[in-house]
Structure formats: C-alpha cells, structure tokens
Image (tube, rainbow, N blue to C red):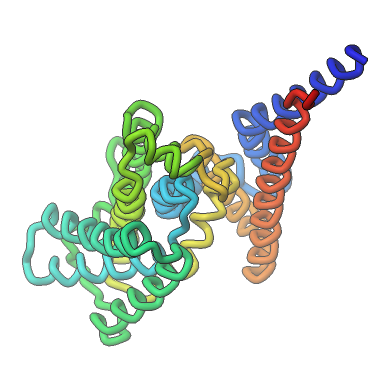
Length: 337
C-alpha cells in the first residue's frame, strides 16, 4: 500500500515538474525550432538584415505585450491598447505640428496613453466593472476619438520632429528596438525585483489573500492598466514616427497580437503567473512566424489562419497545464483517515 502511494506521488511530482520546465524552457525550445525551420525553408531568412527587420517589426507588438503582461498577471485583460496606439500617435503628431519640441510631444503621447489606461483602471478596480467590457468600450471610444481628431484622414507631417523615434538608429541599432529593450528591462526589474512586482503577482494569484496581507488591491489593479496604456502610448509614437503621420487606423488588431504574445510566453489568463522574458520570446515567435510566411510569399489571409491556430494552441496549452497542475496538487494531498 505504501509503495503504491509513493509511486502515485512521484508520478504527480513529475507531472508538476514538467509544467515548471515548460514554463521556463518550453517556449524557448519552440522559438529555436521555429527559427531553424524557417531558416531551412524561407528564402533569405538567415541573414543579418532579416534579423534587424524582425526586431524592428516586433518592437511595437512587443512593447504592447510588455504592458499587457502586467494586466494579465492580475487576471485582467485590455482590449483597448490598439486604439490607444492610434490616439497617442494622433495627439503627439498634432501637438508636434504646433511647434512643440520633440521631447514634449513624446511625453504628451505617452501621457495620453497612460490617461486612457488610468480611466480603464479606475472603472475596473474602483467601480468593479468587468475588464473585458470596460476595455471593449474603451477600444470603440478611443478609435472613434482618433477618427474624430483627424477627420477620418491621415495627418501627414514630412518634418515630424520625433520621426527618428520610429525610423532612426543608434550605433546601427534601430531606435524602436532600443525602445523595446528599455521597456523590457524596466518591466523585468519591476516584476522580478520590487515589492510592487510581488504585489502584482499576489493580486493575480489571490486578491482576497493579498488584501488581507496589506496589499492595496484596487491601486495595484488600476496601476497595471496605466502601465499598459503608457506602453501603448509609446507604441503609438513609434508607429507615427515610422510613417511620419497620424493614422486613425493605426493599431487595428494589435491588441490580439499582444495578448497572443503574452499567452505564448506562458502567462496564465487565470492570473498570478507569468514572466516578462516569456512574453518577449512569445513576441519573437510571432515575428519569426510572420516574417517567414512573408518570405515564402504566403497570402495574407493564410497568415491570419496560421496565426489564429497558433493562438488557439497557446491558450489550449495554458488551460491543460493549469488543469494538470491542479489535478497533481489534489492527488498529492494526504487522504482522510
């Protein structure tokens, strides 16, 4: 009898250990495998120029995903980040045209995103409204605001004073890539090395326990939406700088790619679990996949099909992993006498 119980416990521990291994290394294994496959079948994939193209291409989505990681760790969701990209870009270009210095225009764009996030955060945290509904409404409202501010037409400024943010480079490294690296370093530091980061995980894992432990749950929840909004504001500046214009259609569908990168990276939609490094790898996987398909001349609609399948697989893996961990924990509990 004792032998059987020990064997069962060992098996469950192995299952749990596999889940932990997948969280840390599985997504990296997938990235390496995908790169090798694309290098073998996609023309000109394995070149330094293409490497920089991928890094530049993923920068906006990766920055959005960094902010989204904070939100999803708290078991929330933000569907408005794509529309925030548009509004931040429009606002920053409009103030730049009036002669405002570039640093101030950049700050105003990021602030516009942060304010949009703050409104979402207040409604979710302090009004106890469902995050899905709040951010869905914000997505529609902000998109309408972008169209209203521009009259439905792009605002082009060939002399945009912060265009270098989207198309410039430093020491051969594209400016959007530098911005992406800075964002991830800051996000990693906040989540892994600060009390605030521990509070974010605690709120996502068990908000009531976090409250009893002295964590200001509402403030933490509101703050993660501000972070997501600020990241979207920065992404909007990068987009506007790249196309030297304010585009009311900018960022359409970007929220789905950001969520996909976060989930691919191992962050649980149930909250309380996730790593910013995993999100970055998830964004890389989407970038490598998209670039490889483009190099193979795969039609755009087929690319959407492939991306949709990848998202479903990622969510399925997360769901199965959570169920397996829960089952393993129940099995290891001592039986009642």
